[in-house]
Length: 75
Image (cartoon, rainbow, N blue to C red; front, top):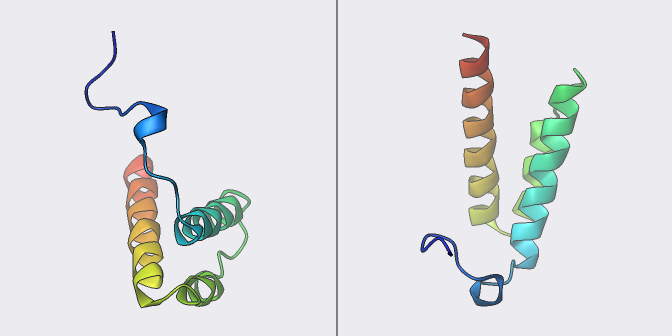
């Protein structure tokens, strides 16, 4: 039985180059935070901005959500 909330992989939209770039940048941020290194968010945001202001805004939103989850884990 298939779950109606999940599309068949063949029906899913392809990820754009921008989507993949944002995912990569989020991964770098998380990796740095997990290794107690400075996350250098300004550098990552600058890299995202190469794909447009909307990409930088999306990255900023995801990073804020990630930090909110990290804070919730410590409470």
